[in-house]
Amino acid sequence: MVLKEDMQVPIPKPFDLAWFLAATMTFMSSVENAHVFFDNKIFMKIAKSRQLPSSIRIPKDMIPRSKEDTMHIKGLSVVTQEITVELMDWAHTAGTKITSTHHSGSENLSKDPVKRKSFWDGSKCEAPKVAKVTEAVSQAMTYDHLPWLTHSAKYAVYSAQVTTTSNKDLYKGLKAMTKKDPPSHFDFEMVYFSKEEQDARTAEEKIDLDMGSIFRGPQGLFPQLDGNGHVAKWNQELLYGGGFLARLVYEQEIRKVQEAWPTVNGVSVATADARVSASREKALYAMRYFMFQPSTPDANVARILQEAFFNCFDHSSNVHFPILTNSGIHNTKDVWEIHADFTSFMKMVPTQLPTSPGDPP
Image (tube, rainbow, N blue to C red; front, side):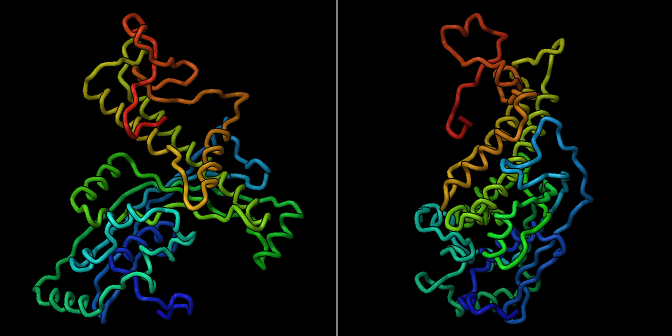
């Protein structure tokens, strides 16, 4: 493959390239397999499989259009997808260590993830030594059976079918900046890992503390929200789809917990049995999954997504927000703040759970 002129840089480290390709292939509708070679010897295989998508009805109390009426969500669907990555053992150990990326800080991060120090090794950081890699390859080839390591992940891909209606000023501004017409329709997709799959990724991180899971990134959105007013306005409207999908999945996951929660005479019970404990863990996972952390390099991305998450419901017909309490899932309007003076006699009143590090605020 011939790279563009601006991509003529040292090749990325094999493990880093693997997790980049695995993440990229998630949103490629027509790419199902990728093989990577070094000196005509294959050292990486990535395969993707998708089940048939299922349609989702747009909830009647969710607002399927952005704040300025630019983006309209016309349909929703979900599909289960699985990615399998096979790496030779030498390639598995050749990558950017988690410890180095965790302490590098975010103040100098490039807006383009491919240009970050941890991905393409530029002139200011040490590039992988070809001699060492060649030695590792020749060493691996002496085995009767090549030492392959396999990783797989299964997750849900939620999709919103979006149509656009730009006003004349926005349309002309976008066309002048991009030299083409703005898209009239597109799919906005979001990946959701179940608690079981996320637990598997956490286990991988614990097994390999240096490299972590092959499915750890790259992650995040990098839309331009500053500079040209038309592009920034379009991207702000675009992010509404992200907040909308996040709220849709949150409502689905938290309602599943509510339906599975043990009850007595129709009332959720606050016991310590296995079923309640499992339901509580799944609810906490859903709430943590949709906590909006500060985004970098632009903090406005997380702010806009969070606003869309809470504002995509028609509050005139629905003022409920389901959360985990001491007695199952309840809407916030029915939940009381915990107070030590009242706990002795307020046994059946839903109250907030005591917080611990990592819990939603």
